[in-house]
Amino acid sequence: MQELIKEMDWASASDFCKLKPEVFREKAREFKIPGWRSGKFKPIQLKKYFDIPSEETFDSKIIAISNQKGGEGKTTLSLYLAECLSENHKTLLIDWDPQANATQLFFQNEIPSVMECLGYRGKPKKSIQSIVRNVKSNLDLLPSALELANVTTPYERDDFELLKEALLPIRSSYEFIIIDCPPSLGLILENALICADYVIVPIQTRAFSLQGIKDLYETIQKIQRKANPRLKLLGAVLNQYEGQKALSGLADGIKKYFPVFETVIYRRESIPQAQAKMSFLSKVDLKTLSSFTDLMKEMQEKIHVEEN
Image (cartoon, rainbow, N blue to C red; front, top):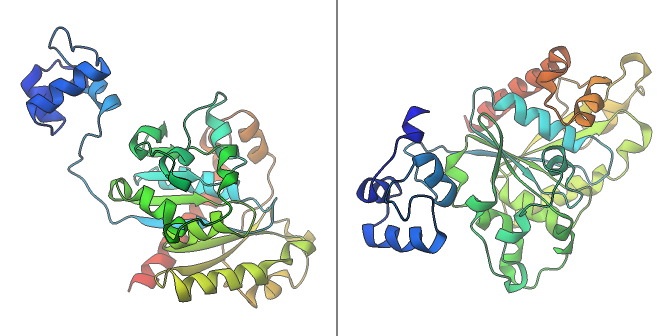
């Protein structure tokens, strides 16, 4: 931390930002970066204005959390799976749902969203680095906004790869990238699946939760055949599970289309409590968080098997 507040001169600052001295001077004056008058800069401030190249790069794993039905727990699964991963891995959570529930857990005021770095329908692009927000040690968030709902119709062939292209500058900065997908089929979901390496499907233990999984399965198959042959289906997760109260035969119904994770996520009051407090689950209920930790470990094992 001490290194981040130590002052640098013009030469050291331009070298830190990996820019030519004349380019750095121009941008420092243009952006009025603190220190542009005195010629003394702090790295912690420079990091706010420039994409500082990292020496550490990763072959990231991108996992889409998807189910076309609403209320199946996609955001909950995405959020706490990302929280568990961030304990030991550099992780990015992408809020790819126009409802922006994950974003609103952290930010109550309007902030720049993923929509601004897509270039959809020729709109100017902002750098994705300027949109990403840190929410916890080792965990960043790419925020969403209602405007994302406008991504409905492909106007160009590249519109199916908007998210994939947007992520390219930062993909190697993370070990895991979790995409919280919207509860629908269509262009937004197809973007997530074309971008992803793996898919996990959360399903609540209710009779009508089985409705539509055939359509989702067919969408995944279509993406695998036509646009993203590397996409792998890791399986379905039984979510908000209630043990003996769960419907008999539910898992068998799911297995017609998806393999089912052994780890289940039980219904616990601490989950909505943590969300109401806008807090991570680790600060509210470590026992409940352990279920997500078990799921994370099983997911990592499945990924390892797929890669070998």
